[in-house]
Image (cartoon, rainbow, N blue to C red; front, side, top):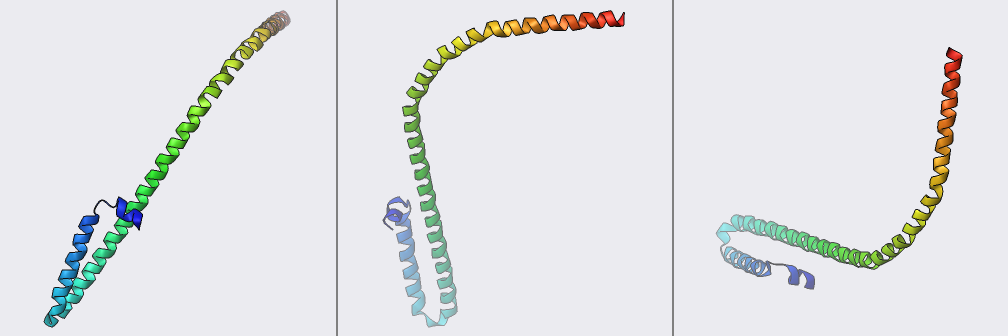
Length: 132
């Protein structure tokens, strides 16, 4: 309940509201002739009190959820800050390796491409010779 009192922005309004209910109920109780109206008012204020309580509980839950999300974001930010230098270091180490592998593979790829072009020319020439 301490959380509810600390975070509820309308706690003073709720106190005034509850005090008003007590006064109205006390005045209504004094008049026996209007007992039906008193019962209706009592029911109305009980329903209203239940609604205020429910709304306040929902507000507290929402505030707790928002706090949880903010804490999660802060933790993720800390993790990201710790991992960023590591990722940069790994990238700095892998870039030269990737460049080296690419440099070694380029002549092989060029050679395969040249052989494929030569094979394609031979097949094309043989196809032309057969169709003539």
